[in-house]
Length: 304
Image (cartoon, rainbow, N blue to C red; front, side, top):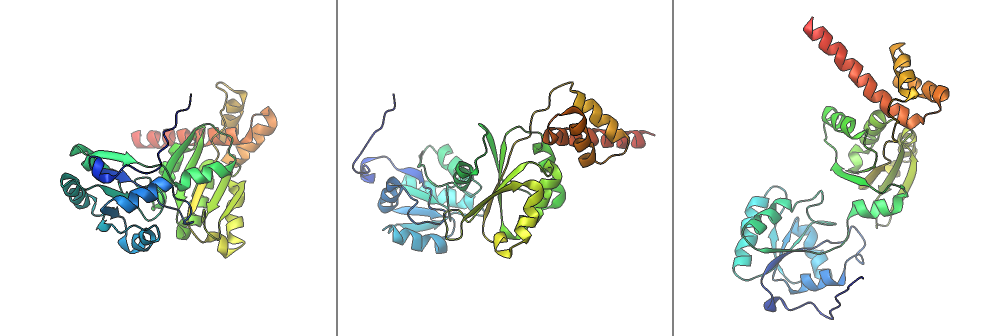
């Protein structure tokens, strides 16, 4: 049975022991905040903010007159000590980031850990998270998903990460900045193949929000067709790898075709035509077979 506790008003901060409240803020639409979050922000004497210049007008909009502490990725250790001092003095603190939920691809995790280690309560509030918002509108019919966040900036590191993620059989969620979106889509296509589904969710909850679904191999052309499509903050969602049956005839055919010098794409398409195994599954398996062959050749050269 679902049990709901309804209260007309948040318990006064003076009646509770002090706590660090982890408070999500809107991604872009000011209406996307819970009543409880507003009540917390109005009652706490202190707010730890990622960027006070960004948060101050937002907090004023919700009637919050708390004093501000700076708590961003580069000063979390020092900010944690300030928060602990306020809690020790009997004053509650709310933590916010520029948009969304603190500590989800944003600062906050180290601060929370320090505050908990000091023996103080952590009270998380539910609210906006771009990854979950995008997933709800993606239409990817997969029960499980993996949220990765931002991929590495360097091409080699990014490719290595994607190679590890490629065989996973569930949806993958990434964040990406506009100036890297073309590189990111190209890297995803190279690692996962052109046929997996990609959902590009851009500027969620904002004026120019768009959600576009296509095959990975079509994504770059779609972005290049209109420069406006490359603007704003992105959530990228990729469908999971299709399972390949163990001891499948498709793998045997794949290996023969790769040994004959065909490219991964050519081999997977031809193996699909011969065996009927799904092209996406064969492509992922071909990536693994090709990588194993390359490593064996490299090991053979280094040992000779």
